[in-house]
Length: 114
Length: 114
Image (cartoon, rainbow over all chains, first blue to last red):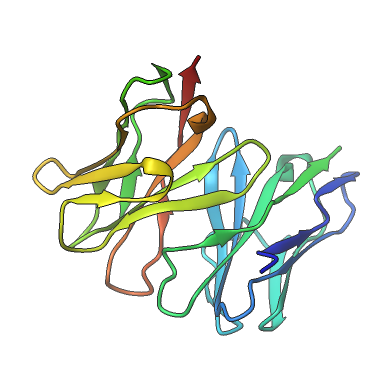
């Protein structure tokens, strides 16, 4: 199995630009999570999907952030417009049905907003 | 609200010595407890879990953790540390209610000195 796939691995963009991060979960997993990791705030859950439906988006910082999961094999996290404080490593994770605590993380996307 | 505390930002241990990484938790009801490890420039990897049963749980790479209900702790241990164990370790908690949201601690950096 290829594991959770994220793209791009690195993204550098200017303030105000739109950024789209992509994730392909492990086949057969029905839960998907987006996290943000920074030195200051640690690991934060942004949004959780179950069977392609957003269940918990309480961690989404503000309206500039949006996430979609159009099907079981693809999800996007979009930031529009981006700001320097959005610079972080963004992780996608997925898990088997009924075991959301055993999450499989992707390699992450390192986002730098200048 | 559920939470975990990892009181040590960094733990240093000599290779071959036993190691302990501390974690305490707060949750309503019976806890589900987990440890994850993050190697540099990688996503988190699941190490072990406590759901119910024996208070001592064994996980990957020779790690184990001891659940102590009276002290609300779930410390990670290994009898003999390897240099390759050097990484960032995260404790996490969930509970059987709701959608079993997982809350991660702030992480402890383990440095094994040759």
